[in-house]
Image (tube, rainbow, N blue to C red; front, side, top):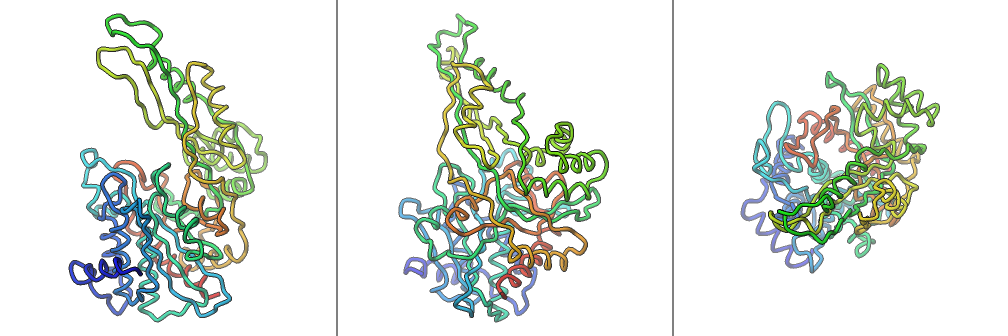
Length: 468
């Protein structure tokens, strides 16, 4: 660690630092790590990932990590967007490392809209509520806790275990810590493969685990701007040609459009497996679709049943932000919208832009591609080296629950590491019902039991991977 970091850690340990670890790897200590990380504001507007990284480093230092194995990485022009890389050395110099990846930044949260303070962790009715309670500070806290437990236990992994807590995953177009590490600290995070967010498990209506997923590939997130300009004028002399109206018409057309259904091995395998676990007409539709991907009626049934399933059937585009007008008493001279698309692998960013132009079918609506987040990452291989230990540990922790690979609609920082030569897989062991965790929305939450079960699962899984 650098001198600045040593000073920060010393101050944290001397002041309001974490208490010393108990002899056993208890749940209370994990809850303390989780609470501290969640309650450290890491929004882009007002928070500091660097502070969160420093606090997690202090936890690991208390657990016995040496200074040379704790690396605070802060880009000079992004002082509040730092990352932490922690290393637990392995005993086999020939074995490539395992990387544990999680982002510690969170989506903005307007406190006045929430039922509870979004930056105070509240446990209520079997859930933890707070911004980041699920996405992604649950997994980040588990990684810190797991490494601390290994250190306390004196566990000596054969392969080196690395952990990277990064910033910027939630802010497309801004600084991204995983991208920075891949480009500037590649040797520090080098690994055979990485474990990341991106997949959990599904609970039925009785809170019984149905399926555990492992993410192998993801759709590509891309923002486009739709913009209409107009000479404007006085609002007392309204005309039909109005920038806001024209933009609204374009967005209505986009809302009504469904991109064509697409498939790959992961999605067909997923729906084939889910058909056996899903009752009624939806399960029958999944079986029919897996057998015949051209079955449009089956695809429509699946898409209507769950927005998450719709998201892995096709490219999707949705309006997420609006701006327009310049005065309350003037006709608008400009109206614009951000459209966020999640592109099915195999389709280019430019092709989707052209598709939007055709859907809108209005030359007055300009469609522009905004900053591209990353390279389009190919799906990582589902080798037995990855799937074997995952299946074995899943069977131990969640007996009778199948482990099913899935391509996710959401984008993760795996998009930066997989192209850099570190295949990245999403797996957490966190189960949720069909509503999900409300990530990115109001009153984000994490089921208490799911968090504790996921903690147990990931601890065993990391130990299994690192022992070989």
